[in-house]
Length: 110
Image 1 (spheres, rainbow, N blue to C red):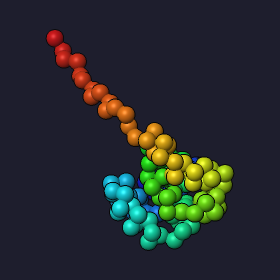
Image 2: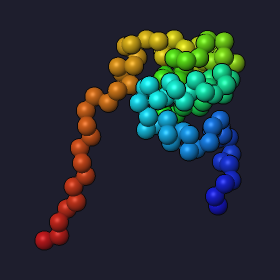
Image 3: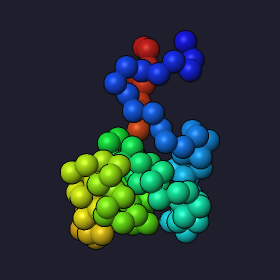
Image 4: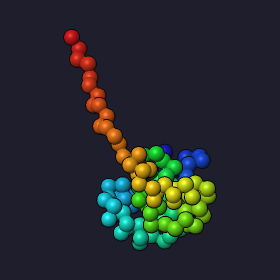
């Protein structure tokens, strides 16, 4: 059943096509696109991404272009954490993958 929201799942504050574009974009393009969004929507998108581990690096890039008040309005106390972590280079480094996962090999039948 396509199009039905999942219970207790936050809706993405931007169209999924835009989220997909942001995920593939470099830092400059993310900045350009995000600066075209209203501040409240940008902060809501940063909070949405922060709550999903696989989108956290995008959350930090978006939060860099938000003030602390807009992030707090969008995410409460988590907004403060997001604001501080987005400006901490040590946290940014921790979010980068350290090693490439091993590929999956399939057993051959004898």
